Image 1 (spheres, helix red, strand yellow):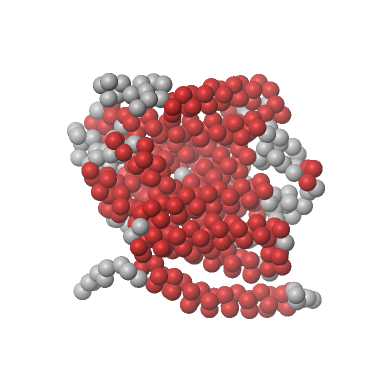
Image 2: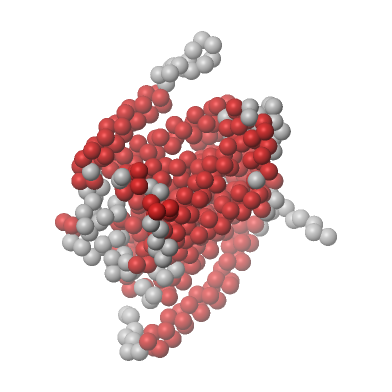
Length: 390
Length: 47
């Protein structure tokens, strides 16, 4: 195998490391361009479209797909479903990295990172939804950081600190669920201010509900999808307990995701009826909307159900991919594609190659950080010096 | 063909009527989906 040492250890120049290294280097150049040349140097943003790919993909999709942290920990610690134990640490790690990268991406969009504490500590705007989102993300990122520390403390053999944090698990989980409920829905509520800009098929008074409910199955789907990748590329890091628990997690999360997605599909139809938007379905935008609703909600819900019935893990994993893509498509539709839909084509926002490059850089940063943590810390396996309780 | 509405009440009556029909559909459809989803689960004795 390329890059394999005679001792069995892999060398530094594996295909993954080389590709990731090139992307990170390019990301470094883009970062310099962004913070020396301003938004105009790297983005296609303008007064009509002040929010682009960095908000639509990095922030909205990042937050939705990081929902696996609160969903999994709530299942394991609040509802007492111990069979999800194997999924908790990878889900919490994914959520922590997801939120950390959301904040990082926000720096690229907002600029002047040294003023990050201002909205919370210096000049808060408590009547603004953005303030609520900012406060929740700040608090939840702190919660996730504390939740992820037991694995780091086990790795660093800081026994006392680990014991202290483990005692806080239930409180942190409850705090995480409350904060997630608040800001997942508020991200949808942000768009309530723009009924004239967002296409009526996506605009609804129920947007906060849609965002919150979709975050639940987005989180579960991401746990399944990320577990699939971990099984493929980090199988050697998993212990028997983790491998044994995986089937249970996939089947249970697949079943829950199928039911929540069916409910989501249903309330989306109710949303259409509540605003009497049926006539838009016969337009081009309607076809695009139906593709999102049937191709990336109803279809994966059915696939999940089929996989759970047949106990077919492969089908469930394919469904999770469609569900994740569906959530990404939905967030991009709301924030970018169907936003300013009435503008002439010449004024449409198309992200620049640098914006796309920065997003790829940020995702790669997350993958590299996950790989580092999963390789060095007891994420996919128990630490021999500690009982497998966290 | 979309019906014309001349009053808010006319609009709400129409919209609410459609939602009631959808609710009835959901009351039938969602349990059926659950039956499809969990139909092959092993029965658990709860007594």
